[in-house]
Length: 218
Image 1 (cartoon, rainbow, N blue to C red):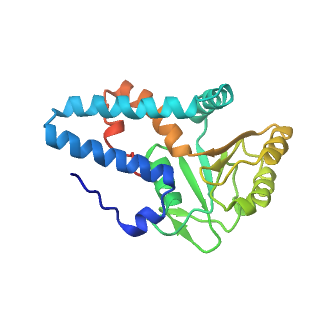
Image 2 (cartoon, one colour):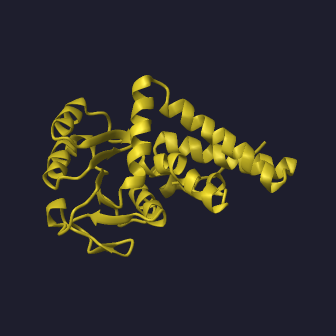
């Protein structure tokens, strides 16, 4: 029998969905070691499993599939992402997402009134204090704060307002944002979407196919 131990502070910062993915990843690591698969075979098993999970989850309904297509179309066109509610704690989900986006080549703008700098970037107390345009406002806030956060985001006129996975669904906010001609995504993780929709294309072009053997834990 194989047992898995998660660091408690890290596990507490995960959503249930993220913890299940993390556990599945470790399961594959354990199985690979026990049956001594060659590295290239481990990669293809892992790649197939996680691609299947993403396709099943994000194309479950016609509406979700359409949203996934829209996300795939605009992610390569953006360059600056303001992260509202990003934590100073490197073990929190918001920091994992911000770090991943940095490594993917995006300019991140931390928005946290309690911080001067996060991930090497100047932090701002609110969106209105950012002195240049942003393409995406990625929101890590509690569901009760979403309405105010969306209003503040609309004021800076981004291309996209993205409510991060775990913030819930807000049909009233979706209507409000679309009326302003702004793209709206809710209850999805921008890191996961980039990881499955965009990164495989860029890494295939460079001949690097390591995407799904790492970066699954966030």
